[in-house]
Length: 255
Image (cartoon, rainbow, N blue to C red):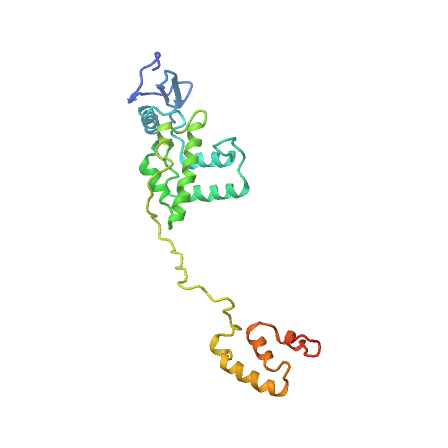
């Protein structure tokens, strides 16, 4: 604390000093967990200075860094601007990954964005993960905050503590979606037949085996070389009409 004057209020470990003749702002002083002395302004009003002092004292009680009072929305903005993987060689994000991260963070922080870094607990993390309507979205919401937490703890000075990063392990228990989503339609119970369209010839529309045999017998009386065979070719081989008409008995194609 300052040795020159006495604080007008003490909030936990933070002293609140009145404005002096040189400055209209209240002054806050404290000692960091590592022994460094901290000092900042608290605004022009005593009420505002006390609110700021409470935030700092809360952070000191958690032994968190000076960036622990940064909001998650502010952190997300910086995180996306850096756009680098927090694993391996820290390569820049691809355009696709950047878009996914932007969408995922916006979804997770639409309710929790005003929270401070020091407010992140396992309950908060699970609530952010649950911001979705389907299990697939919840799964995506689990991978994005894990990278986000790791980034926040590796900044200098850090926003988050290693203990906060450990709140979301690799094999975290699943959470239920808290939003009303649209369930994917059930898959068909039977496989669609190949060619099942408006032009598909169903079995009831095709000639039967007996009808093909009868037609072959009738044609054989007029064309002994190919009459019996032609209906069987048309019914079983799958040639188009034009291809069938090109078959000629004279050329030996039917022999």
